[in-house]
Length: 240
Image (cartoon, rainbow, N blue to C red):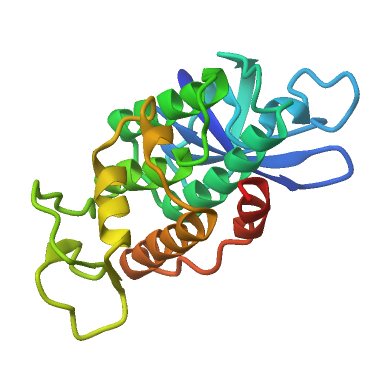
């Protein structure tokens, strides 16, 4: 049975001399793994270059409800990314976001709203001319809403933010997973800002690194087997 679906590329694993297994987050079927024969050959119909992290595709696929490797009949890059593959800052951010998405979407079922959010975020990153130094922070907090652990954002900025309970609070929690001033103010701004205005949030390089590490701790607390994020160092160097 053939099906059409939009897809976001997440990971490629070499399967044989010329073939790969590509993992996608698909609009119709959630996370799926596809065996693509000959993808590493120069004249491949579905070439490995189309499958790079966060590339967007239209697929025609065979679907079996067995949980095993699936097959692709046709793949078209659409929309084609213009800047992310070529611009070092944007490609570095994409590598980081891809690593996070791969961790949190491992068992993801179909979710059209989540799919559209990720796709539109990728396209914004690809097309924007605005500074993007805070984009990844905003993306992570907007993504958390779809994963079920978006922090409750009050109009009043309280002195502490409890990363475990996901709430702003007047008093320091009894554990170390906590944000406090001035980082609570920056975090509150990140929760409430659009991508278009995210660059207006003023923070020093070391504050951005600290906030990102705490947001990753937030993900670790709420995501089983989250592990370490290998691409963090790249971002620290890019936005220095």
